Length: 240
Image (tube, rainbow, N blue to C red):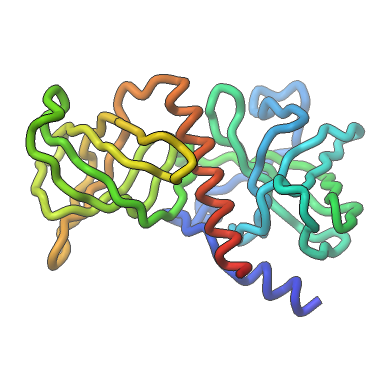
């Protein structure tokens, strides 16, 4: 029991702001327009109600309003408590993020069954959650000319729709530049056009909140997969 509480108390994800302030739960209705498009084999984050990442899993539509979740890597799952509340968070085929609340009704070392599912509606929905990161990148100020000045930067977090970076280079709000980065070594580098939305100056670096511009669907899907891999690596490093 104490080990389970310790796991739930180990925060891995770091959302930009608490979801709880904006949440509104609605019963899961197959006919509802808010019903996420779920399918067997879908990859999801399994989290505590306070957004602590427990493990990365894959879904199976078990029937009768129950979802089965197994560990993505096939390993043993954390010990579960009957009626323990959890969150499931992932991406639909259209790349839209979703979050479900539920309670554990049956579990073993290999699977969790989750029932009493409810959708989580966010009044200030950003479409995608953000994953904290410490990833190096290169900024090319002129998107058209790769042989121009290249400025080093660090990605502080990343989502499928944007990123927060820090660098010593000054950009005005609304500026656009090309960002080149490798999220995880297993994936080829990304080359993404960014637009500056927010600016926060620090003592040495400048922090920019950026949105991605014109990111093709295939590249966005590849980015989502890389974010999942990054999350798994962070979770594994905390276990080790």
